[in-house]
Every structure is written in structure tokens, then in C-alpha cells.
Length: 186
Length: 183
Image 1: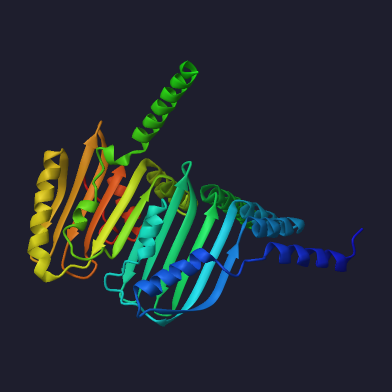
Image 2: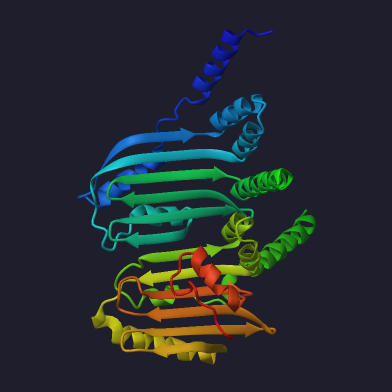
């Protein structure tokens, strides 16, 4: 039977292996570069980059599955539906002019089969949400959120319809359970 | 060899053509291409919403617990498109005229005008298209030179006009918010 310290060492080793390369994303960096190149007045300072691929996510899912709690089992199920998560957070040192803000990255994404789901522009910021379908399922969502404080770039790839279905089913079950408890308590 | 390949190729072609025809929302009688209004403005839209297909399913699913009636309504829709523009007073007459031309064309194509309000500073038009006894599409135009007040909304699918306000709240579309159409 493995000792506690050997189990921790194993988990740390697995985490180290699976997290290799998870602090850089070429795609996220390119979107930021595109913005800075197209809007020379813009200047963004990197704060956080997270890039978790299927190996890392499945390792986290497997680790979560080791815990006996129901929530951990749910988290494991959710993580198995996600193939990749990329997040980049940049501090805005200098804001681009938002008048007619139309970053070239959006055209590049559209050429690659992405579609604009939402664009909302205010005086002090803009939000773009793009998505890509495959086999009648949303498989990719990419969000660009620019405010006067932060630029957030985030991409989630996976079986997102299935993921949401699971989340809603669990959410519904939990609420039903709580409702039953409340009725019993009264 | 060709005798075996050709029927398979033809079958594949027929299947993909059928799937393409089914998925092509631009052929739906309730569809309006909002790209045509983009030419009216010399600036990019400040609001874009394009929700259809699997993404619409995703939004419906997300509403399933909090608002089941809205989820049911969303499942009957095929697409929701919105374009919002900042418009200057100087462009008001020009845009109004283009909108009127578009309305005439829509009416020629079988769209009914259910609301038409013309004010000094605002034009509001709501049109619906029927198909086989049910509403197949709705088109809302709000033209006003105030910021973010010039909005075009196209909804394709089976729409319950009484539920339209819910849709406005869900997608944060002000002109639809708290609106119900007596039809």
C-alpha cells in the first residue's frame, strides 16, 4: 500500500508532467500581438497565461475522482468534457481607440470557421464572443474582453453542449434535493 | 470499380445536399439578412448578436432551470440576430428613407407590419412573417439617433409574441425588453 508521502509525490509528478507548457499559448499571444500591431497606441502587459490541454484536464479530473465527495465526482465528469482551456489576462497600460474598433484577429478567426456570437461595445470597453460548431455541437468558444483595466482572452474547447447539459442536470438534482430537505424540515 | 464507387458518391452527394438544404437558414421564409443594413452605416455595429444552431441549443439549455418557458421558446427558434449602431442626427433622414424602402420590399415579400411608430426622433417598425399558419419570423427596427438606440433584430422560428419580452431580457435587447406584440 503506498504511503501518504509517496502518493503526494506521485500526484505532484503527474501534475508537473501534465502542466508542462501550460504557461504559454501561441494563439493567445498572437491575438494580443495582432491588437498591438493594428492599434499601435495599445499596450498590454502580461499578467497570467494558462493553457491546459486534455492531458492536464484529464489528470485534474482523475485527481478529483479520487475524492469521495459528490462535488468532486461532478467536477471530474465536467473536466472530461473539456479538451482545452486557454486564458490570458493582460493589464492595459495604454488603451486603443475604441471608435470603430474592429481587430483583425476577428477576420482571421472567421476565416478559420469561427462565427461571431456577440459583440458589445461601450465607451470604455468591448466584448467579443466567437464560437465554432462541429457535428451540431458547440466545440469552441473564444472570448475577447477589453476594458480600460484588463484585456482578457479566453478559449474553451470541448463538448460544450454536453458539458452544459451535465451541469444543468446536476444543478437541477441539487435543487430538487434541497427542496426535498426543506419540505422535510418544515 | 466505378460501378461501385459512383452510387456511393451519388448517395453521399444527395445526403450532404439534403443536410445543407436543411441547415441553410437563409432559405427560411422568416430569415432576413442583416448584413444588408451594414451598408447603411459608415461605422461598424456596436452590438452584434448571432445566435443559431448549436449555440441556440446551448442558450436554451442554460435557461432550462431558471426559466423553463423561455427555454421552450428558444428551442422553437432557429436564429436570433441583432445589430446595433451609433447614429448621428445628420444620418437620420437617410437611414429612415432606406428603412422605408426595406419595409416596402419586405411587405412585397409577404411580411406583415404589426407596429409602425413614426416620431420626430424615432422610427419603430415590427414585422412578422407567417408560414403555414404560424409565425416564421419577426423583424424589429428601432431607428433613433441617440446612442445605441438604432437596433435591428431578426428572429427566425416559431415565436410566441407574448414571450418576446423574455427574449429581450435574455439577450439584453432593449427594444424587445418588456415588449409584447398583440398579434
